[in-house]
Structures are given as C-alpha cells and as structure tokens.
Length: 213
Image (cartoon, rainbow, N blue to C red; front, side):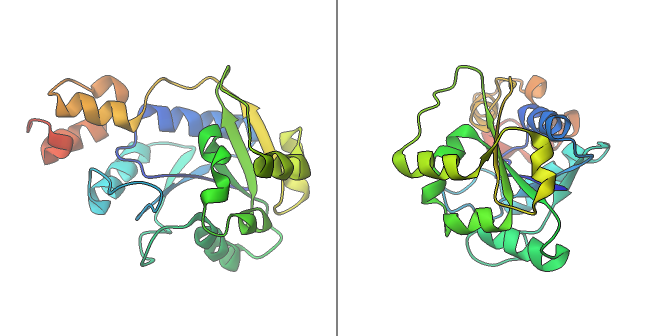
C-alpha cells in the first residue's frame, strides 16, 4: 500500500513529521511519501520559493526510515492538483495497488472545492486525520460522500485499490507553518518547531523575514 501526505510545507515542521509517522503506524505502512504541492491553487503564494521548500523537505527526511520526499508535482506545469498527482501515480503503479492520500479533517471538509474532487476516490483511498474535540460537522455533500465510502478499520484499505474513507482521531503537535513563519518574522527562535537541518537552512537563507545566521 502506497501512502502519500501532501502539503505546501512552507516550511515543513515537526508537526508534519509527527502526523505522517503516526498515520504510518495507524494504517500499517512502512513508508509515507511527503508530496510537495509545488504550485498550490487553494492559497496565496508560499512564503518560500519552490526550490527552498523542496530543499527543506529533503533535509527534514534525509535520515528518516519512514518518511520520503516526493517530487512528483515539481516537474508538472500549472497549478498542483491532487487528482492529477494521483492519476500520474496510477499510470506508473497500475490499477491494483492500494494508494492512500492522507489529509487533515479541515481539508477533507473542503473536498468539494478541489479540482475534479469526485475523481480522487476513483484513484485512491482517503485517510482523514481529526484531532480530538475537532468539530465533526460536514455539509450535505460531504455527509453523503462519507457515508458512501466510509470504512471502520485500516485493514479494509488493503482489500481495494481505491474508494474508501477512513477517519482516524489522533492527537497532533500544536504546530503550524503559519506559527513558524510568524515567529521567524518576529525575530524569535523557532528551532523547537523544526527539524534542526531545516532551522539551519532557514537561517542561512534568511527565509521568512528572519535574521541571517
């Protein structure tokens, strides 16, 4: 089973890595590919360049036995769409291999805003991570979609190549890229939020408005 965790990673932080590792444990995979969203269509321009975000992602997982940096979206021109990334992977892996796309609850609730969102479940399973106490409310479209595709156990993901939604509740580290960028822009130390190599890289490149090393 192939597991993918997409993100802008602007910058990649310890919260991302913790979430990806916990999901790997929960669904029983030996590795998770961190897919860099090269040109995200759902938000404004990233604070760091594509080249810098990719370098930071590579540094963050360089010595990791579970996590891998995935550059699938870097070579493709135009906006980065999950459905196109999954279609490209299917073309390589074939139709039988189970593929899992990992996303947070807030992103899942906004799935209808994704490009060709109904095709995503034709190509992959969705593993949705919700924090304890997070609002569970879904609109009618997402309620119907969830009811039609929901499974209760990770073991069921291996029975089909795509089409299932598995919801898991997991405590996450209280870290966001927004928090990291704000601390750095204010001249504050953010090393406790980041892999050491990423913190060193940010300082050396004077990213996010922080002071140079």
